[in-house]
Image (tube, rainbow, N blue to C red):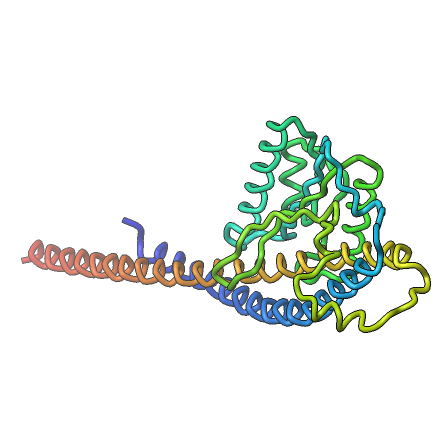
Length: 295
């Protein structure tokens, strides 16, 4: 049995660990609230972008733009897993990478080549450890992604697609549902789906393009400028979802760690009390035995 001093030392160590996990839980909770606010702020912009693209698309009879090219023979797919730069977030990073590698196996079974673009230090380290060749890596911003970060990722994805190095680009990330639930999502961002040029709500489309308009420049040129911005918006939205999911997962993990630390402290305290009681009993027995030896 461990001594009272050893158990007391372990209790102090676990208490210090619990202080750290509680602090990390509070920090994650604050970052989660900010991430939720940024997601809500982005929604009106994303909806307006969809309406604008839909309206311009309706004004043009045919669009032949590189980002809209639907290739029948898909020979290569670029997978972009959005992981975090840090751990201590439960299964957040592991479930993204697990889904990404499962997608890779499926694509290879179909005879397709796979290219990788790493976002986040955890994803980069895992991919390099498994000897995957990277076509790009973006690190150091997953706690608070900026629009410029999304622009860089979208620009690289567009380069791979237009150069023919990838016939499809797929994001793999966690969609934020709640602090307890994050859903792994696969989203094909390239080629851009022609469905965005259509709308099921005719009334909203009419509001966007009410009356007859003369476009200057032509709708095709406007769309050529809008599609890259639309792609950046999709990537930025995924980054914000991933950030909120990471903070929610970290908050939950640190809360569970604090709870487990409390249970360990209770168990060690009980063991320490038993050890102290055994020491006291042993001292009493020694005193009694010594007194009897003197008589």
